[in-house]
Length: 470
Image (cartoon, rainbow, N blue to C red; front, side, top):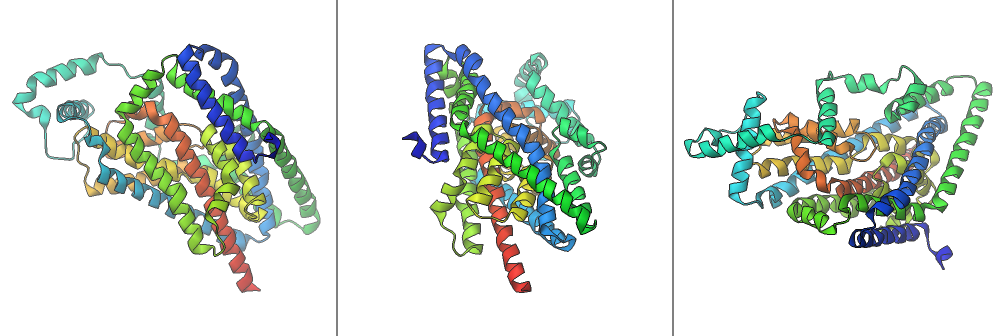
């Protein structure tokens, strides 16, 4: 019977069984067994996908550029691609701000707790010479003197966790970099070093450069290069097929491992975490689901006459399920390429150019989450951000999403940069960290769905342009 099931249903079944196993594991104290004997297979699966993803990006982008055939057409497609990705990211951030300002998840906490949070923020701002934008100064009020002393003592005894400190250091280095550092980082000094560091942006730069150069050499020599690139690309696509045969089993291991690590042998601990952050979690989730099930289909409906809602999601389900379980756009890229070309019938020259770039620069889900998280944390600390500060969040989240690595939890580092841009404490990511892993899974699904949508739109625009030229 399982042979007749479509791949996405098998992956969903694997995910559900993984969740069931994690609950049983937590209930009966099997977490150690799960982490030692089941979770490693999920890691193996991720490693196998990443092994294929990096060289596939290189050869896909080169083959896409060669397939375009003209630098002029490449420039037009590149402008359309980056333009649409930028617009979708700005919309995602704006949607996040609308939701968080309307629903106000940070105001659920009682006033006394928020008062403490506000005073803690003011003490941090004073110690770090950060200007407080609004007029109120609760730590200056004589009525709060005792509370101020208590919170100062508490702050001096608190230690930042190792994981948060590591992200703080990364964010600090990024902030200190010059305005053109992202451009500098995109150009590799050594392509082999770029492969070792898994630097997707540098690999894409090299691929575009290589592909462009191929368009300018004589046809006789170019044909040899083209045949080689196309053949290698097919080999990597076949490797994807081999890995995906066992995908449902690997996804089971991945889900079981993720939840077992979060819950340990006490499921009530995880439930308690979600209880405290439930409203914030729901607001982010609503925004992400609006992007997946309303925004992207609406875009396709407007620009594609024969768009069918349920058929679209059925066709891209394997990529979405994989994005959800791996939390990595890069790891999902091989499957995204396959479903877009085979199921949605997007031309290879479009998919091989648009999707790898999307996996690197298009982070709609990450941007929306950053906007919601930043305002939530401000509300949580009794801070009113002005319209100017919220516009700063839009700009910073949009730019940060371009540099955000296509790997799990990279959005947390970018969130620190967003918080710093409006004078908030970047260490506050520790507050939202407990629910980040599950939100990361959903926002990666948004990112991949956005990539698929833009690829479909670009394909439609290119088809229309070719029809007008004929």
